Amino acid sequence: MFRFLVAGDAVWASRRSLTVRAVSAVLALLLGLSASAPVYADVQSTHSWIVRSEIQSNHSMLVPGPGASIHAADSYRFESWPFRGGFDWSVHLDPGTLTGNVEGALTATYQNTLAQPGHTTVQLTYGGIADESRVTGNLKANISITPTVGVNVLGVWGDVGLPITAVNSNLTTNADFTTGIGTVTATDSARQTMVEVGGDLLILHYGVSVLANCSISFTPRLLNGVLIAEHVDTGLRRTSVVDFWADGTLGFDLNLDQPGDWKITLEDFYLEQGDFRTQFGFGVLFSMGIPLTGTSAGFGGDIVVHDSGYFRPRFEKHWLYDQTVGEFRIHVVPEPSALLLLGAGALALKRRRRC
Image 1 (cartoon, rainbow, N blue to C red):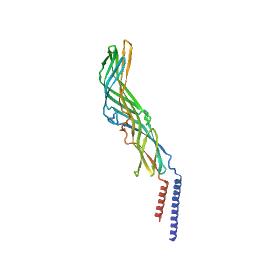
Image 2 (cartoon, one colour; image 1 turned 90 degrees about the horizontal axis):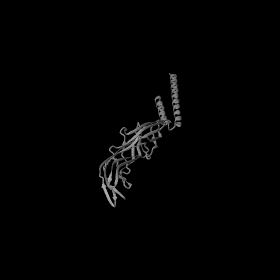
Image 3 (tube, rainbow, N blue to C red; image 1 turned 60 degrees about the vertical axis):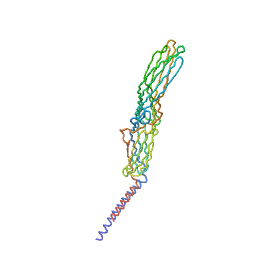
Image 4 (cartoon, rainbow, N blue to C red; image 1 turned 135 degrees about the horizontal axis):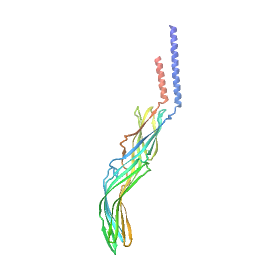
């Protein structure tokens, strides 16, 4: 009986020695890995998404947001012997309608796996998509104008008035462009002949043309959004504001200090700032001549009725895209030291059970 117990103790001691040596070998291996493991795993990923912003509905061409009508009136006179003339005018402009969108590609470049908790850099790049951005303006105007023409015959002026009333104009401007934040200016202009009249007065032959014109220009200035890093298990969130003042690449340092999966989302990206300008006016051209003498002259010019100056149209995210523009994940591997603690705990538990 005594010999059997001694033999049993020897067998148990031998097995315990083998277990200790095996666990020690694993711990030694983990220590080696801890000393040599890199902070970043060499696994790089790239994803791209479309970012599209649209001008809010019912937007005026004259002011930010909805606007009111504009009314203006004045007169113009000229004289160059033996001719003279001029006109009285009044213009009523409706607010017009401004529509359009700015579209580009947002690309994220990142390490999708980190060998241990720590910092990593996510690069975001924005660039326009060829001819996928547009601004369109539609402006309606009602112009009343009364031209007057005259000629001097033997020291006496003869004049005649030509009433032109309630002439309506509908001008549409379109500008397709590739986004270049802060650098690309989209422009377009429209010119429309509204009315042409002509006739004879004494020895004078005359003609009058009235033309409406409208021009627009737009420069995108700032694309704005947020980058959110959220730990999937704990819900810890870290947010970075993203401001693109120009096409190009921005780098963001993320502190992913907990092991596990981190969800990275790009949210609320839209064009926050852009400079828009509308100019509306009309031109009146006079042609006057005396066929008997061969004397002729032309007069006229452009009247600027309204210049909005530069203002910022109100943009919003396109309805096809929800709040989240893009999403990806980065996996963080636990530190080797954490594995060592786990292994040591397992060894202690094993020894306790044997005792």
